[in-house]
Image (cartoon, rainbow, N blue to C red; front, side, top):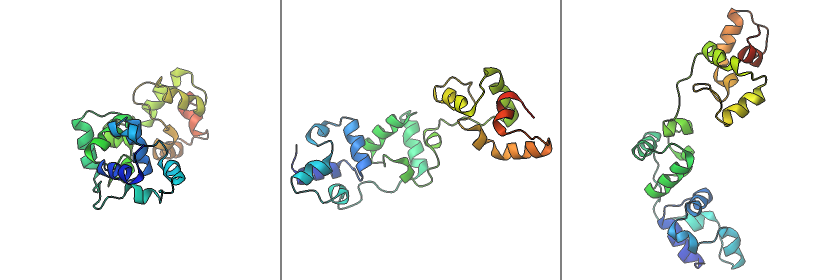
Length: 187
């Protein structure tokens, strides 16, 4: 392993500014990763050199300038990044924050990567969900996570259709809970 001062210089030269970015650097097996400890705080503390992440990752000038969501979207689009792992790799290579929440205007991974789908109207989504035989919100979420739902169904319909549901419930005088309406058409 490199001595603390050499490791810090390498990490700073790579634009790493946090523990999270450091872990991403190691994850992507950058050639310098073989010279760096997996847990630098533990490793360098045992040698009496560790003073904290701020010191270890601090560069004289900011290594990662503030970036906007638009810049991040352009980077993702130009490099056809469609998932988090691809973003982490691009961020390290191009001096962007690995954590996209540090991008000015960040709202979601889908917005950053351009993978968001248009939200179907509530009634149309419910018509797609009902024939699937799903009986609980938990089962729905499991099916969503395993990607066994039709395209266009949201990850959390109760949250994403909250406004539409409240209006529909009031206008149709519905008494049932959201999930009963959404999954089996109860009123």
